[in-house]
Length: 346
Image (cartoon, rainbow, N blue to C red):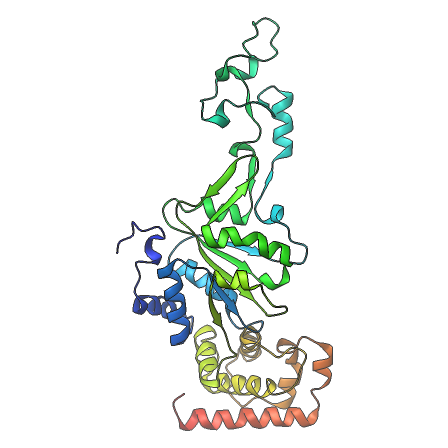
């Protein structure tokens, strides 16, 4: 297989090479994740990644784009997102100016039908000292409903950007959008094409690599799931999270990194409104490293945990539940992790 295939370097990569790219970019991926991503690349299928917030779903799309040195096109979904917001819109100001200056027409065909525009066309329609040549397509002003007046939004950009190498299209938090937008995506996800009334169907020469993420705030349709390969990202184990922290925050002492992961692991056992994810763990690790910039390596104290708890818990109801009893348990978990780190190789 060569890079002449539709997705270029993506479907030419082996599973082991894909793992190496993840390793190079310090993205900790287990065998299931690597295999699922590999199959999505080989089969040319969108990848739907579900899991709790802060579990590295968005980072996966970023790492794929960086690892393959291609463009990342991101569509952040939100309630009320429409096809027009995500696909395209017309440059109305440019269209109006073109019509007023006789450089464009809402009914012209010339360039829109494939003919070359006449450089003198802007003078032809209404110039008083010229005969009426409106019967000649070459002298008609070109239509203002062609690609020159089109403003590409992320979805259309993803279909037209892959001249040399397919881009990565990251459709982030699809569960925030409504079902109508989800239905709109079906054509793009199955055929890598979209329909624009004024232009017709636009298809991708090199289909993008599509990664959709969902926090499972609502169920997604069966039709969307059928078009995708599926990956569910679980909260990481202590060992996996320790490896992530060690790679992403290398300035943090190894024993302290173990304590950070142990405290987060213990917090996840509580029935909080929002349990801390990997993103929060990394935020807290960086915060602890900043406060210990002078190189202190003593164990985390209850006071230090309490003062920085805002890096981990983002709901006031959750923060209010962190009392002295829970702080003692968190400190004990940190102490046990330090002893483990001192006696074994994590």
